[in-house]
Amino acid sequence: MKIVKAEAFNIHFMSNMVRDGEGHAHPGKEHDAKTGFFRITCDDGTTGCAVGGNMNVDILKNVVSPAIIGEDPFFHERIWQRMRTWQRLNSTFTDRTLCALDLALWDICGKKCGQPVYKLLGGYRDKVPAYGSIMVGDDLKGGLDTPQAYADFAVKLLKKGYKGIKLHTWMPPVIPEPDPKKDVAACAAVREAVGPDIELMLDPYHDYTRQEAYYLAKELEKLNFLWMEEPMDEHSMSSYKWLTEQVDLPICGPETMEGKNRTRAEWITAGASDIGRAGSEVTGGITSLMKSVHLYESFGMSIELHGNTIGNLHVLGAMGIAGKYYERGLLHPMIDYDKPKPWFTEIYDPMDKDGFVHIPNEPGLGLKWNMDYIEDNKDK
Ligand code: LLH
Ligand code: MG
Image 1 (tube, protein in one colour):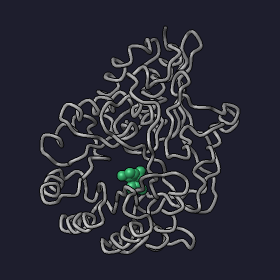
Image 2: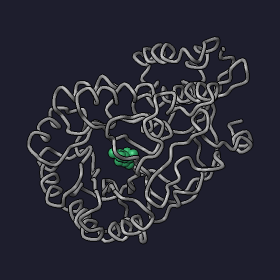
Image 3: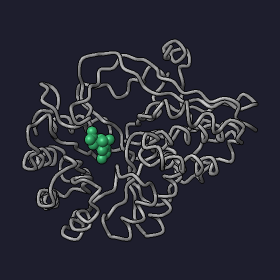
């Protein structure tokens, strides 16, 4: 089996999400937007696809596609390793871009074997509990503008079946200065509204000082939070080691740090977090994420996966260690999360009334494409 074609292009769509000055997403005015799409075709007609995730379409078109023509997609690890080494001299060849290649390859392997990807990886479970991951705070009436707005929304999420909830609180430029006291007010309001038995997590401003992060952790201990993630710049591993040593609250990380499984190894041996973190998009795909999962398992640590990605869902289905949750979101009172994006006919992570997301069981990644929409709306 050989790869004969690889295509990357943008798909246009109408979006009601806007990015603020620091890149955080919020609801906003509908506008024309675009997202990347990558498709590999093999000599027997099998295709594998990936969409979105901030992939770099130019790199996929000009670097990846020519390099993989003629390769056997089942020599997946070899292709992934070779493309990984290309990243060294090309800063725009991101892990998110490597992830698009990796997902498309796993999709092909699954389709060809007639098995969902999580079973090819070594199936462990076919459903995972989801936590509701609430979007970064804003100043929108009817949105996430006050601690009470978080509390009201959290109660709505419980009614949908979520058993755990994570808050992303306010960050500049929505507020002029980061404000840990305001974060604690939102966390306390949510705890009060949902009662003592719901698991809660906080993902605050990502650039607090050690003292601010320490203050937050001590307050969250009183509110019985399950973990806190990314309260400081993750490039300072020593700050995380310092925080993890000071507080009882479990610290989860690193989330966005580059370096894939090797960075995770450094954090583990430094004792820089209590719970591990990685994700298929931020660490270069399923292939790399499985390396991190096995690494954490070897050190007796759990890992919570970052983001609502199809790659994470399949890895969660193949994880024999905790990793308890699938991060479902980002959720917001003014956004219908369950509405499929126009390039899909169905969402891949519907949640049942008990708060579980079932791992897609169709061969490959199990994504339900609307190829007519994609062909009609691609870059001309
Ligand atoms: O900063 C943001 O907009 C969010 O924190 C975002 O990155 C989100 O994906 C996250 O961190 N989830 O855990
Ligand atoms: Mg996070």
